[in-house]
Length: 232
Image (cartoon, rainbow, N blue to C red; front, top):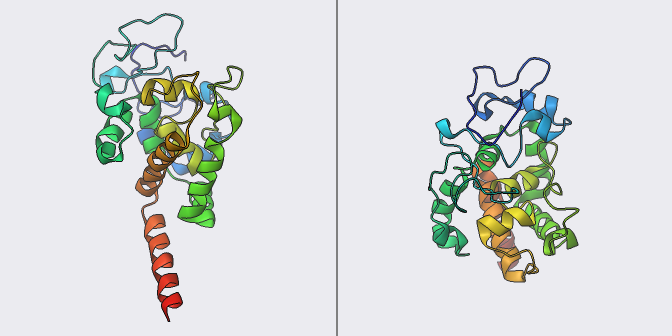
C-alpha cells in the first residue's frame, strides 16, 4: 500500500498481512511494536509526511520541494489548526496547549500513543527520571543536533527501535533540525543554544512523565529521602 500526503483511510486491522503497514496506532499492541521494530520506519508507514485528515491527523511539514498550501497549514488538506505564535514561544507555561498542537500532526500523534513496551519501560526505569534527562541533554548536544548537517538530518533519531528518549523527541519535534525549524522556529543556520537545549529537554521530559507517570514521582521521593537523611 502506497502512502502520500493525501488523507489516508484507516482499516480495522492495524497491520496489513505480509506488508505490515501500520494503519492505526490505536490498534497496535506492545507485541506488535516489538515484532516490527527492526523494520524500516517508512515501510511501516511511519514518516513525517503522512496524514489522515479525516481523523484530524495532519502534516504541517513545509520541507517538501513545493508547498501544496500556505506554510503553517496542513500540506494535505490545507486546514489551519496551529497557533504558531503560541508554539514558537519557548515558554513552558503553555506546554499543554503545545502538546495539543503536536498531537494534531500524524507523526507526533503516533509517538504520543504508541504502546509502551516492556523494553521501553525497563530502559526508563533503569535510567530513572534524572538519568533520562541527562541522556536527552547529551543527545541534543551532539554536533548533528547542535547545527544543521544535511546528510544527517531527517534520519538521525531512532523510531520504534529507539528508547523512550527517542520517542519523546519525535513527539515533541526535537528529533531533527527540520522539525525544530518549523515547530520551534529554530533556523538551520543557528546553532542550538543552552536555552534551546533546556527548553527542548523540558518538553521531552514532560512527555516521559505523561507516558510513565510514576518515574518523576519516584525521583521526587528519592530526593526527599536523601534530603531527610542528610538533615539527620
